[in-house]
Length: 309
Image (cartoon, rainbow, N blue to C red):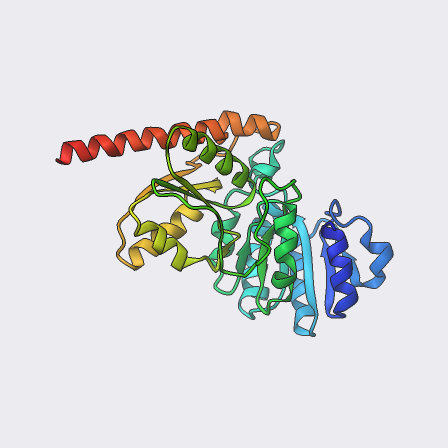
């Protein structure tokens, strides 16, 4: 089953569901002929689409809207905040080519502040699947949730065999580690798993966590990891400000927890447009480069401990 087939199944089961798009049909190109008047294309008008979705939601519908993630979260931000957020309406916001998946596009089309923007709206939740299988495992629960959700659309092949017990607000533990734990979401799970493999071959004990939902986030798991005195790595295709690193920092400060944290994110820059493998290499997000950064951080920490002794 793919994303489009899942939508068809849900639409047949639930007459409230309506599919909308702002001229972004790549993942749903066959739906108009199948679901007829329950498919609405507003053209290149993201703000209008959100306003219409809010109106439909007020009349008992569950609108699933589609657009490029950069335009959905930025151009239509005020409409999401005011029309959807304030009313806590069950509109589902599906952002295409988020993060590094916007590989061939320049800064205007790069959604690398989308997590920061969407989590700032009180009722809007966030789902960042690591691949298509992960997305399909969670979409039914996400779509039927009574509050708004922002979804980073992802149709990549899976890098791991997923835990099928999806729950909103619960992370997926890929592996556990005594020395290092890599926290990540979205497409970088593959690089995290491979980086963990490199480090394990060097004698390190490395855990990998697929967070799945960044809002609500699995706070209990985060706190338990940070209390275990491991090096915690936050890995994300997002600006360092407002994403996972910020979320973790807020959790730790709130509960007065001290922890060694290494953020791997975009720091004060947009990424250079290229094919995805080249973006990962150039920006330092390949498994090898991630493992190298972690090793360098461990060296720094060991020297700091020697100096303190």
